[in-house]
Image (tube, rainbow, N blue to C red; front, side):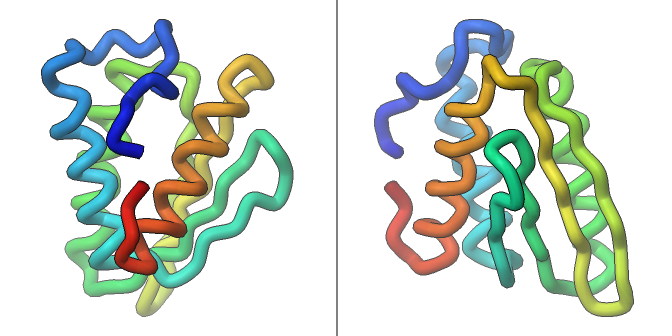
Amino acid sequence: MTDLDWVPQSCTLPTEERPLRVAEWDGLFAERLREVSQPDPLRLRLELGGDAGIEVQVRDLMEKESGCCSFFTFTITPSTDALLLEIAVDEAHGPVLDAMATRAGATAEGTPQ
């Protein structure tokens, strides 16, 4: 998704910073994503692999994202060798979650949209 038209108007991140944030998510997906699933239209589940540092990285990104897109609800569940990140949105932001799911899958496969 080189075109950022899918970013909702409710996002308060300055336009010039949006490509940098997308790059942060892409890096996380490319380096750590093991599995992506969308158990329902308003929830995305990402299994991320890695060492203990992954939780710090994800929490930092969650904090940044929550600061500009308050419609996201993030939940982290750590395990021994992975981290489960669940992202939920309200109905109005379902398309944003769909775009994130598509991007996560494509980036993990080495073909960012």
